[in-house]
Length: 155
Image (tube, rainbow, N blue to C red; front, top):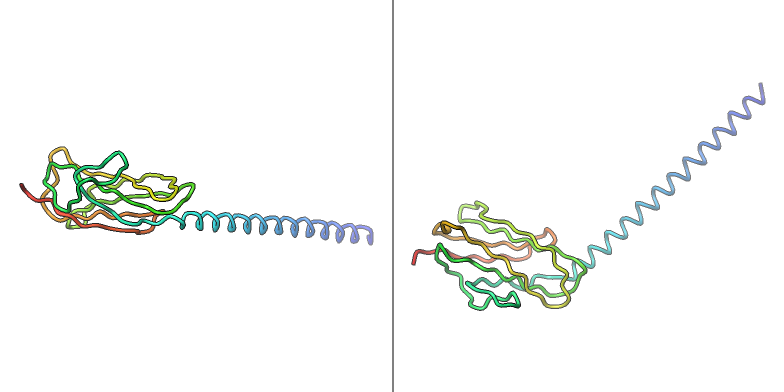
């Protein structure tokens, strides 16, 4: 009977030792993932939106060639989002809204900037945009980064 009791105690110690080792591995993996996430966030934070330019045309460098904040309903409205900094990857998103907050368009682009860069976004509607006030909001990696207001007027 003592042998069965000793065997049970030894088995219990063995199971506890295994459980303890498994918990230590789980904590180590969680810690490693947290460090990796922090490094990624630090890399992404090296990129900043410097400005947003609006206009009726963009050049080959994605920069607006004719700045404007007033457009006609049938024009294409270009936004050039100028960033500074470097990262292996970053996400830019534009949200174009009408004066009542209605979302007109939303577009995301993944970029890999190396220094100064410009990324082009645009909005238009086949039957024309309604006359009124608009806003384009720019998000960098999901966080608000800049915005610009403009107006669509009749000619």
